[in-house]
Length: 309
Image 1 (cartoon, rainbow, N blue to C red):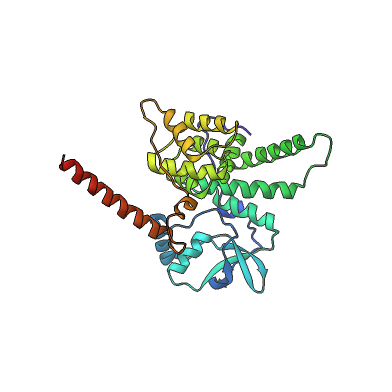
Image 2: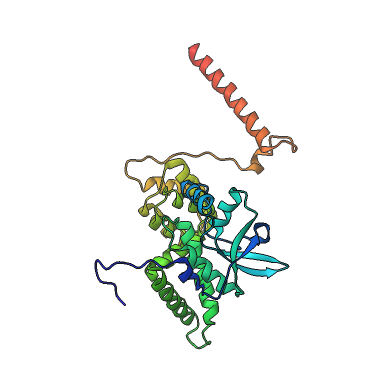
C-alpha cells in the first residue's frame, strides 16, 4: 500500500522482525558458547551508543533476549544480538538470555539482516554486504528459475524480481539496492573511503566496474590528491575499453582531465632493475636507504658547486 504524504511510519520491533512468538522462551547461555554470525556485515563499535547500551544493561539488565541458532556440539551462532553480547562481555557477564531457534543458513541470514538493517546511521559498506547476503539468500530460498531459451536474460530478470522484493522490505529502491551491492566489488581501501565520505557514493559505484589492480592505483591517487571527480572516472573507464593502461598513463589521464592542473611527473624503477645494482641479500628497505643517501650526497655536491660559481 502506498504511504500518504505525512503519514506516520510504524516502527517494527525486533521481536516482530525476528518472528518471536509467545511460545518461545529465553534461557541463559554461556557467552563462550556463542559464535558471531559468519561474515557478519554490521560493525560492532565501541562508540558513545555502545557505552549507552552498556550503562542500560548495567542498570536494567538485558531486556530483549538475543536470537541464536544451534550449530552443533553445544555451540550456537548469533543471529541477532551482537551489540548486546559485546556490551555484556564488557560488563564481565558470563551468560546472556537467548532464544534458541533451528534455522537453515538462508533463514538465519534473512533474520540477521532484518534485525539490523533498520538501525540508524548504517555505513554504506554495512548496507552493501547486508543487501548482497540477503539477496543471495532470497534467491536460494526461491529456487533457480527453470532453464529456457532466454538464458542469461532469464537470470537477470530473476535477479531484478528478487531486488524488487527486497526493496519493498527495506524502503530502498531496487536500483539503489543494486548500487549498494556494487560497492562489494571495491577493494577494502576504497570502500573504507566511502564509509569515511572521502569518496562519493555515486563515484564509487562507477569505480566498482574497474579492475581491482587499477582500483589500487586509484586508491593511491585519491590518497595523494584528495579525491576524484565523476568525469575523471568516466574518462578512465572509457580509456580502459580500448586496452590496458599503465599507472603512469592513468595518472596523466586523470590530471589532464582537471582544468588548470599540470600533469604530475612520476619516476619509477622496477625491483628487477634495481636488483642490477644491489647485492641479492639487500631488502627493499636497505635499497631505499642507499638511494636516499646517494641522492643526499648528490644534492650537497650540487649545492657546493653552485656556491663556488
